[in-house]
Image (cartoon, rainbow, N blue to C red; front, side, top):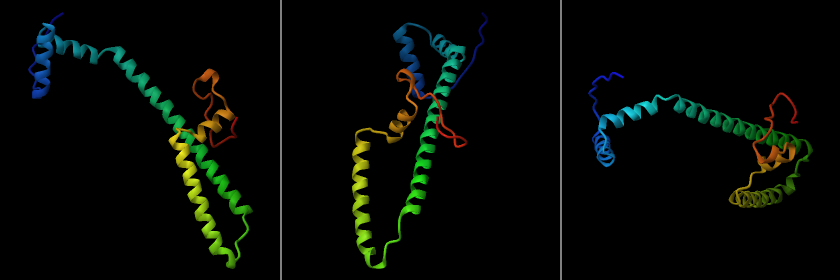
Length: 149
């Protein structure tokens, strides 16, 4: 295989590390750079990058699914609450506000405890709806166009 000469400029720290490794391994700096370039341009590296991107895509799909479940749940709950909650009489509004503040504080405490335990209500609900096959990832991703399986 023919080789061509190439002059490059390296940062001081990179040159120091290159010289250190070359001395430690008893090889030339050129051979280390050539091996690094061969690894960088190898098809295995491209395959590894592709696998990583695929994994990130699956992760983003799960996040999108969780977000969709959360948004739909909140929207349905708000619609339900607005439909079934009677207006509070003027004389009872101060008491209702105080009770609302106390309930909200209680809700925040429950949420904090749940998050501290590492729980995920979205994951729990989804696993009840569509259990993962043999402990793996979720089998299906719901869409806004259709009902959940």
